[in-house]
Image (cartoon, rainbow, N blue to C red; front, top):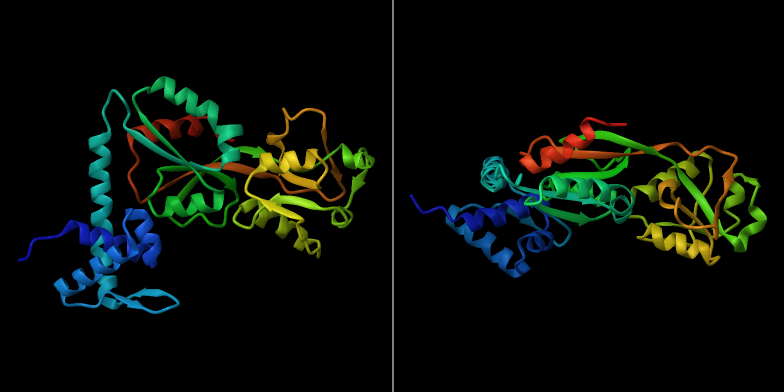
Length: 296
């Protein structure tokens, strides 16, 4: 029996889970050519073709699917062993949290501070991504917990979500649009003004487009960005009407105001989620308990 080359199977796992050689190379911090060479080496060792490669997509062959059914639980066992070794009783181990910049800034910071004071030796890694991207990171086991906007259609079947806070989205403007103060505008009337909102890689963008579609309205934003804080700043200087969560604007001063709308915007929530198929470190379980005891 030949010696098992763990590195080859690790490369196989990441290519098989992403079906993308480029994405696998990023996760492994190696070149795409090194990924391709490793797969070719493994295929030669096994005398099997594991992937169907084309210019448009990568697919697993039936033999590749068989191998993945064995490799995936093996990788999860390795992660579990690593997690247990990293879990020292005195430190609580490590925790990887995914959340957007907005959620980190306006919601998570007090919880991170509380956790750090309780477990000063624990290693905390915060990964800033949109709620949409965080769901993908959780599905692929690249984070332990995520705090995201909810509902979130991108959460996989293995994700378990705990709803922890309700919030409303609001339209805000600067004094350039002072004539709108005290008025109640319909969504159709809002479209006469430049709309500023998060870009298409966000659940917030999906949410607002769906709301307008339900009213048979076609929303074409003037500006789409990745930062709610920047949207607020642009609204303040008069570039348009920004769509942001209400918890972002409490301390933004009197140079902006909230617009009233005739149609009611549905309420949304923040949720913390974990992958039921992957083990949680002691640190992750401790952090999760902050929300299990006071959800919603």
